[in-house]
Length: 167
Image 1 (tube, helix red, strand yellow):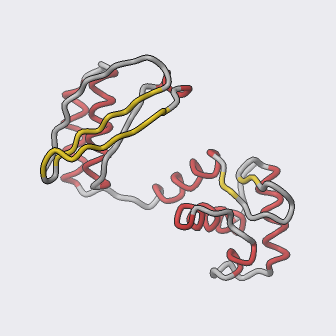
Image 2 (image 1 turned 135 degrees about the horizontal axis):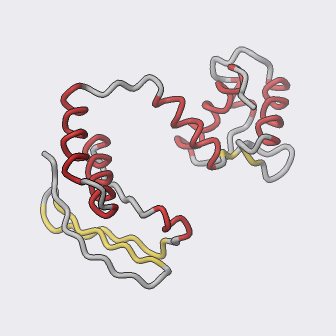
């Protein structure tokens, strides 16, 4: 079932507000944005979004918390309008060609590209790692603009990897 434009706007507001504040998003907060409908209408739409699996609420009067389904929808919405510059498209094409079909190389490539484009650290796991649980994550400063990231998983696994920068 596809969402109405109003429910899309409400859902995107919920996800954006939850990302920004980290607390459940109340209908009053949603109505303070430029949605243009009453808090009662928003509550009805949030109930529908909850029934469709986009948000959860601990109890009826609680604010909405986005689910994985909501985050996926949010990313799809914001990625519709993103156009990569030609230079970035060429970089991606060149690196994909170098990675061939080896999964480990592709995952390293994805992490490298993600870190490059968001100017932040990136961690990518294999598809079979969907059930992998993170126990600890440590960042150790080695020198300016260089850090060691230690990832400790619940499952026994040791991976050693050197990272490099595209810049």
